[in-house]
Length: 120
Image (tube, rainbow, N blue to C red):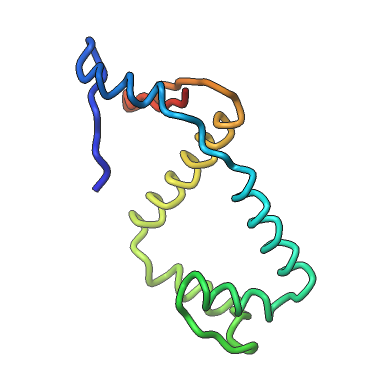
């Protein structure tokens, strides 16, 4: 469970100071690793996807198991609770908005439900 920290009215100001003063993460190594993975997938195709699926997800797939038919997708949609689908769509929207703003150096945003998101 994610810990929620209330920063209103000076509450938990010590935590805020720690968050504000922590050093920036060096993203260069991460970016290079991601670029390597994407490059391998572009070059090697399905075999790279299978390799990385096993490496990261601990799932062993075979070449023929990667393609999902339209019928399988439609069946999956019928079986999933519509409230869950809506929650997933809303999460996707929120994640996209968050990461669009993340391109800026420092920002804060108040969402419709009153949640304040931000990055220093």
